[in-house]
Amino acid sequence: MKTAELKGYLLAAIAAAAYGTNPAFAIPLYDQGMNPNTVLLFRYMMGIPLLALVMGVRGVPFTMSKDKIGPTAILGILMALSSLTLFESYKYMNSGIASTLLFVYPIMVAVMMIFFFHERFKITVALCLILMCGGLMLLMKPQGGQLLSPFGCLLVMVSALTYALYIIFVNVSTKIKSIPTTKLLFYVLSWGCMVYVVLIPMGYELTLPSVATGWLNLLALAVIPTVLSLACTTRAIQLIGSTPTAILGALEPVSAVILSVTVLGQTITSREIIGGILIVLATTIVIGDKSVDKVILHVRKMFPKFK
Image (tube, rainbow, N blue to C red; front, side, top):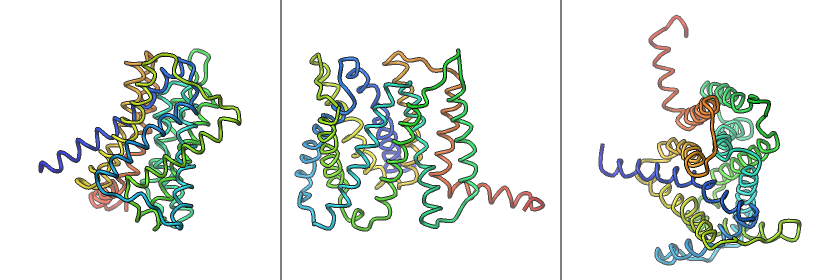
């Protein structure tokens, strides 16, 4: 393996693991009396100057043509809603499980691309849907007389759906594709901030950390799962391509679950682990469907009677 490829895989793994740290930094802020809307507002506000600094160093202009303002606003709203519903779900369910359930978004993307953009239906999609449903059933199975919060699951599904719409919009919009990644995220976070500000007079009280360490958690949210994750992802795609980078994104829920258990002291059962593995496996197959299709084709050639 070439040094550049090894570096790309390492950066992709770091990016995925970094994004999975969201609950580890967010939940302690909830314990200090902060609500998800305020946590995300500060997260985005702290991330914006960091991105501005990167843009300044790289010489990326801040100006945006009028025809691109609308699309970036839509992306900002979608991202803000996805973040808010995910962070709200942490209040109703184990954050590691919430992060695992979120990872059904690539399957949502695949299904919507088939129905709305006429992509060819593949056997890998059907296989992944079966695995995903099995994983969800394991996660939802009652234990000790308790059921995984339906409202919490609904919040995660809304988060996954809005993030899937975000990804599809980025993929199909020619205007968005022409915007540098760092600049795009700068405007996405800016529009997201406006969403959180608008929600304050609508019932989301503006709260602050009760201890000094809370500000460190907010800064960590802005740096690690936001700026660091984006920078590593972008560079990894340049080195090894988008598919291997996305496949390593399966480490996102894995890191979230590990941190939920080791840092937050939450518990997780073997059944939930198996359910999470099925969901991650289903998503990985969707992302790497070309490779899976080659394996299926090879197997069919080995057994011609079953063609």
